[in-house]
Amino acid sequence: MQALQSSAVVAVIGAGAMGAGIAQVAAQAGHPVKLYDNRPGVAAQAVAGIDRQLGRLVEKGKLQPDAREAIVARLQPVEVIEALVDARLVIEAIVENLQVKQDLLRQLEALCAEDCILASNTSSLSITSLAAGLARPQNVVGMHFFNPAPLMALVEIVSGLATEPNVAAVLYHTAKAWGKKPVHTRSTPGFIVNRVARPFYAESLRLLQEGAADCATLDALLREAGGFRMGAFELTDLIGHDVNYAVTCSVFDAFYGDSRFQPSLVQKELVDAGRLGRKSGHGFYRYAEGAERPPVAELASALTVDRCVVEGHLGALQPLVERLRDSGLAITERAGRGVIHVGDAALALCDGRLASQRARDEGLRNLVLIDLALDYRTASRIAISWSADTTATARDQVVALLHRAGIQVAAVADLPGLVVLRTVAMLANEAADAVLQGVGSAADIDLAMCAGVNYPRGPLAWAEQIGLGYTLRVLEHLQASYGESRYRPSLLLRRSHAQGARLHD
Image (tube, rainbow, N blue to C red):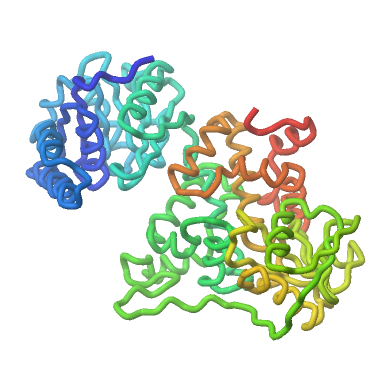
């Protein structure tokens, strides 16, 4: 299947930030582009804005002047929709309103050629619903760009119930020719990214509500242990709580109130108060001039340790042993159940149970649990929690051990799954359910989460890296602790683990 030829006219309807960005992408790829907006003069203003942005790239030496001129020359603002009659592809980027979009698509179907592809940049509306009632619903497809379109690599190619597979294939290869990273997905609530990403926000919001730690500390742990570019609170402040909360509510409603997508009362209170994040100057953090970010809570220890005992294989925690050895620590290894003994303390990788529950289950005194990290060899901060009977000395011995390896330590209340672990497990669980339900392939879902929201590793690849059995066990323990279907493990995880199969097979 071939991409659209660069000579094909691409029309973009809606000259806001997203529409203008899409027009710029198509023009940079060599297409003649017609930009239309029903507000007089707005399309021309958008083209002028694109010209200024390209000019800044020229000033920075990232674009040649003649390339800038060629791109702008391919952008044609038009004042009447009838000027789009020769378009081979029309991409609408107008208001997120089903009726308004349906009316526009009917108008375009009557105006354009029978083989014209009608694409919607919707982030939340059903492509099946948008195409319903059209004479040629097979020509309607989702082409969901991420903001800002010229910079963000991901494009979700969304097929509705009637979408012709060849139409989706043409757009997939066209997006690829435009330098993007396209993925195929079905028209289901949230598509890939807005569905699979819900636990990233939801688990931090729940941890905050349950008093695990403060916002700054939870954000720092996701960044510095989890490798995420931003923590959930700073990211929702950036997105805007009105937008993020509305998406969560939309997905929750679309899945008939499934508790996996339950909105947060903490976030609702921010929305009700008008604390929408950066754009209002106040969200979880303050953004007024001179406002300081709250400090990250860190545990201190006056102790020093020079040796530890590694009992058995530590699973995903094993790379920490090499980091400790490189620090000059004397390490004795012996058979056992996967625990590091340092002084009076027993340090173990969290498995989704409360520290106090696990200490009782396994007969461990002075148990300290450590959180998951993307890479224990480079993580600069990590979370720990401890059982109720753990002494202050035992806790300090663990802190001193981690300080010896150059790792800052944050205390988290004794809650199931700590921070990074429960977030990654829930992301993998949602991604697995999306694969099971045919929303997208494992490869496309992992690509979407990395290219669309900058995850450091695809959630399914991450689950495979730490072990499907371990991921499944964490989810089972979370479900047992909370007694909620929110944490129910995906059937795909159970089946893949039982069969000894990989999710990417």
